[in-house]
Length: 184
Image (cartoon, rainbow, N blue to C red; front, top):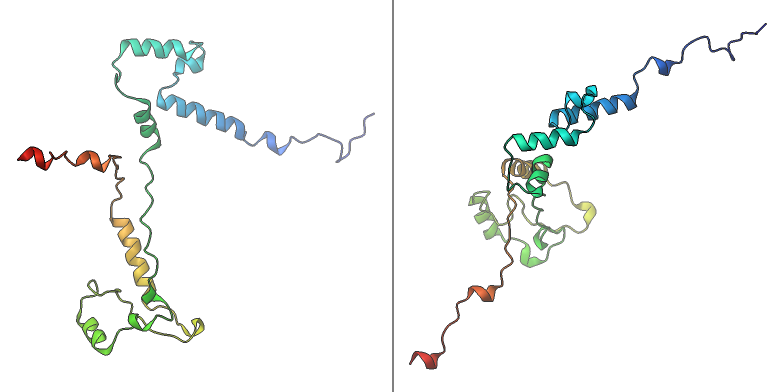
């Protein structure tokens, strides 16, 4: 007689038996991806074709293909557009210091002129340089949220283009001038 207890009996199936296998799901996902790209066919999955090299070589012989398409273009097609980093913000100037020197502090006349100018034409934008005795007495910048929003808007709306720079020797661009004695 075999004694059945709750600890030793395998009376109930394990929970993992009822859950779908993550490994099999990964394999199916890979096969679907290869099917969509055209790397494999249903004949290969059903076992009618043993090697996909035979199928692809026949396909290449029969249909048109790109003769001059290089590996670089193929890689770019797969990856999508290249990431271009956003332009960096300019570092703060001496005028934006909490304790700027007197040459950066505006006079009464400069402040009056500053008020009359358009915000885009002002030397420091919405910022007015002020002098504080210490960093603790400096309050929060009132236009911080607005300036951050405008920067985000600029980054969102302005297209980024990767400039291709040519490495050309500048002296090769300058024409060779004849000697002054030869011109006489």
